[in-house]
Image (cartoon, rainbow over all chains, first blue to last red; front, side, top):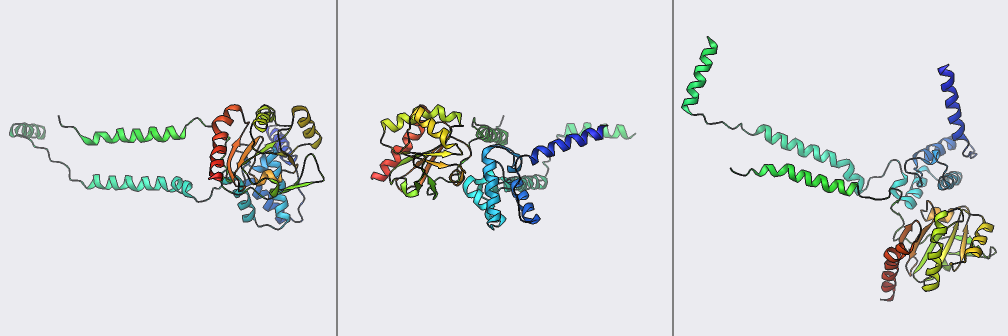
Length: 149
Length: 182
């Protein structure tokens, strides 16, 4: 029963996705490139949905644009560049290496190195020897001797 | 008691944390995307005029002076909100205002301009959204400020309210005019 229900649920959701629009492609390879591109381009109108999953007007326009560019023989990289030039970092789910992203990626590494250096210095520092006066030393000796016996 | 300077370290870390969190959690609209087109020339286009569909408009029709380009549509509620302010700007200033009618129905668009008055020098039909894509538009309304050389110098996403005009757009326009005069 549960399995049947699951199957039903999934068939419904798949139908919803397929209902948005279907572009004809001359071959399977191009269809796959199209699916890949609209999966990794973020819809500019929605905060976290890709072009494939959005039915915002702009997403429909951009899907049509991706379709047109693929048919016109553009490479995937060129299509991503086209989108990047217009919509900036936001549209790419895998952002490019730039100053901002470099800080984001290398920052934690830098912190790790700094932490490691501090730890290294602390570990190497000689432990401080505390002065003890003769009276206390005598007490200590006595205590140690008592526990031995 | 001697003051141990290393006690200041946690305080310093705390202050740094506060600064970063303050920057990160600033009240800002996450829907506002930074524009990739600032300081780039307005994209080339060849699209029909809304009022005279037999005529095509190109980049050359956007005059060689500081101007505004407004992306609008009849399906966009915020366009209705900003309309009175656009009318006022077109009446009270000598700034050319061009319209890009985005993904719209021509009949409805013409009806809208007759009913509400037309603030635009002309509107172009972008029914496929191609110019809008070249402009990095992701909704309407959006307003671009162009300098005298036709370079995009500012972009405002959302309705142009009197406050937006006074506090944001007008200063940009005035600065650009000064620059082109001087």
